[in-house]
Length: 200
Ligand SMILES: [Ca+2]
Ligand SMILES: [Ca+2]
Ligand SMILES: [Ca+2]
Image (cartoon, rainbow, N blue to C red; front, side):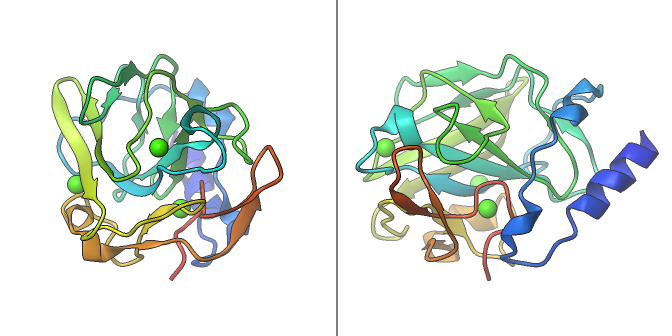
């Protein structure tokens, strides 16, 4: 496993804002790993809550990041929002250290997500993204327009330097993604860095 981890870390050592370091490592999902168990072991790093003109189930996604040297699986973890939306991750989604992993509402929102969820959509004016593993909230971001940036056809992006489960609770540490962009499955330009380091 050490060799595999070293490989994964090496593959992830691309520069800030370099879209070439997009992470999608389905082979890692063959590995055995445990769920994160404590708050902060996973960080919600990017949230694409308003994919207009796409509907939420066509274009929404969010990204998580592992800030330590640990390897985790999200299988069995629950993602939920401020309302009644809840989804239990049902495959062995392995998150290697330093990786940015995308969980999306559609199979092809313009890139290949690491995991496709259902029964989970996010409010555009405010909502909460919660990742709960084994009854422990590993990270959550409660955003409201105002302290947190409005972002349409652009992700809400946690600024580099604030990749921390506490720092991401502060709206001023987020900004609307301005570049780079990708093309969604209907040909619209969308801004964000799904599966890659957030831009400085
Ligand atoms: Ca939405
Ligand atoms: Ca948080
Ligand atoms: Ca990103």
